Amino acid sequence: MPAPDVAALLAELERSEPEAAEPARVAVEWLTGGEALETISQLDVCEFLWYTLPVKVTGDRQVIARALGRLLRLGGMHRYAALCDSPATTEILQAYARDGEEAGTAAYQAALEATGVLPPDVPELAWSSIMGPEELGAHVACAAALELAIMSGDPVGREALTRRWLTSPRPELGGDCWLHRVHGERLNRWVLGRGNARRELAQPFEVRLHAPIPMPAEPHLEPLWWLLGMAVEGVKLTEKFNVSRAMVTESVDRFGWDAMTAGSVRGEADVPTLTTLREIAVQDLRALRRTGRKLVLTSAGRGLVGRPDNLWAAATSTLLLPAKGEHDFEISVREAALMLLADGAALPYEELRDRILEVVNGEGWRSAAGSKVAPLDLSAPLGELQRRLDALDLRTGCSWREPWQLTTVGRAAALSALRTQALRPRQYAGMG
Image 1 (cartoon, rainbow, N blue to C red):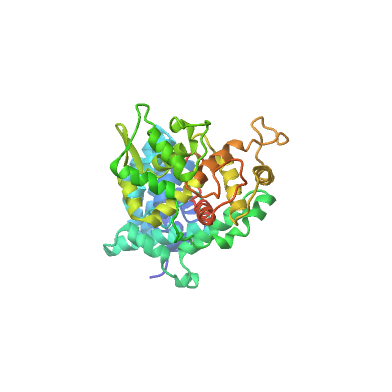
Image 2: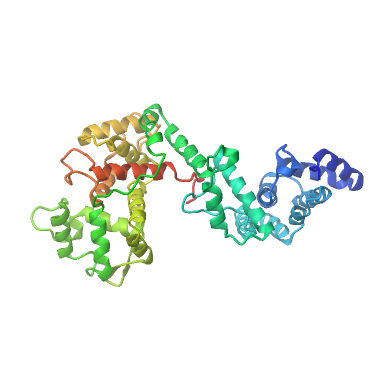
């Protein structure tokens, strides 16, 4: 059966229902972007009706939706035409008109999820809300595969089918897979970054970060394993919900952490690195939770303990997760530091700070006063990074007086953290 010709369909609609021809033309131009009508998918139709039409198109939206339905029926695309007249479309358009864009968008997202054709996030890939060409191609291809599976009655679940579609070699990609294409695109975008100094520093990492960084064979993350092991029986807390003095003392003796007070250690507040370790386990990894006056393993924590490779990937990613009150600037500082240290260089604090300043100044960051001339203060983000490195036992020493140098495991952890950062999905401001 020949593909429907848009011009011919519009001409036929003009003869049979002249009042519908112009709104149908407007709709089909937005929907197809000038491409052939047979290239559209259910996802395309839903996104046009439930987002593009109410947000970007002017005119009577209900009239435009119904006119598009008439055009699609003339072209034999009855399933898509039914979406134009569906109660879901009417309700979503009314939500936009009555309650505003935020309510309409929420209704659109719920309805789109219910269709089953929206590719879900999978362990290998969380989708961006701002997609490059390769990711958009992968998303469209996965959505089309999901739609076909629904139509054919294939019982394979959405996640399994999406993973298979992303990771299988594709003839149309010359034997490559969509996942490699998306990862390559994200890595390239990350390397290009902002500023010449940042690009020069990141360029060698594009190849180095292409494959996952394997978990080291030697013992690693020993403070974290120690804390998680203690939590199996429950870590007792004081009345102020700090860990006991005995446990604080043990941590200093085991890992050589600096205490803020000279002489005997009085409590957790004297050893900020231990507090950082606890925050990593509780807030970032969600591996521990407080119940009464105890810290205990969560189900997520038990899962990580049972899968050391997953714990490695999750724990190393925390080197570039924002602490409370941190934003993009602080993460840029920590990211540059890890790139400078990833090859095992031993850098005094002042040298490390000055080299990072060159990078972040080139990216266009300004001081709190808004001046590009006034020096940026890197002490807080570098202090946070130092505590995280020490909390995971990734530096050669734990004193602030010593040059910064990563252990062999620390260098692998830096690469793992940078790879996770480079491959993260791009989101609009305010989105997770």
